[in-house]
Length: 235
Image (cartoon, rainbow, N blue to C red):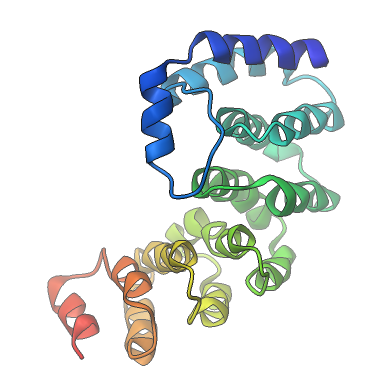
């Protein structure tokens, strides 16, 4: 398996360029490790290797993903997210421990957080809704990325109209969070929920607009009609 990862890494190194590396680093407030490979190229390389590994036992694919996460390099985290999502139909409840470890130990920027949680973790929670309770625990974490994960895991299910009460519970826990990336995360979650439940999300925003950070509020109402936005933004 080490040969697979080393071959993948060599391809990523070969595809890197200084301009992309500099652009990537300037895009994040926190310090990140990157090869400097454009996202479509990362996706292409990831797909090529997935063809070779997708028939492996799930445990071996998880092990490969672990190796990628442990590197701390953002492009490798994207590949790990892609591979784990590709085998999501094979998930079992016990696999949550693996996903939780990645979130708590390896996620170190919003891009890796969102790529993992929007797709892999979101798919898992749709399969096993009882794990929404774990996400509510995440929302109380001292780790900003774990708190953001609690919200952005719901993005895709929220667009489908699912988990509305759980979404409001997560928003309640994160409501006064002082971290702008957590505020953007739960605001985004509410915006996604508003696509299927506009009136309910609007009512939630109106009840909380006097205390909700403006960053979260603006995200939450972004898809709403202008008259609703004006009401929500008014003092």
